[in-house]
Image (tube, rainbow, N blue to C red; front, side):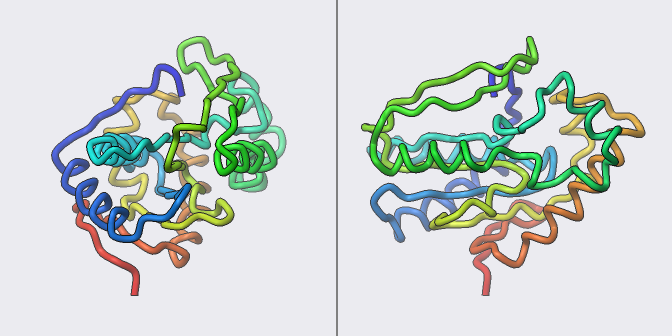
Length: 212
């Protein structure tokens, strides 16, 4: 997302190193890594750190933020959610999975690929073209990223929106009001339901552990 604010700290670097070690030990051709977690938990920061770390090993990894794939335009989303009932519509079905699958297919084929990219300043949806011919890995991050089909490594950040309110306020994507709290609570239930499908957990203190 254009204009996104990254808050990379030492904890992201430490967790990123552990993830990097795991990826290098289990590397596959055209590998896909997915990172899920609640709002403000550090998904984008972790994706950035891992991608930069892979670059040092000569591996080109492209972060792909699925918040770009909302079906409803950013300027219309609040009204749409409220009119349809937040508890009824907030969740994975808000995303354009068909376009995401097409972009992933183009990544696998090493072809140029055009997909949505939200500009957080103008709140417009641009179209961004990426040449995947030189990209070795895809790092997909987002609330429901680990639902993505055929992902090789699924990472789940265990922080909930209760612990990340400060990060959400600093990043300033959406105002912290009653509407936003209802959205976060609904997202919380949806994201936590994905936890059992994770291969790797990043704990409350950002420690790394494998699923059993």
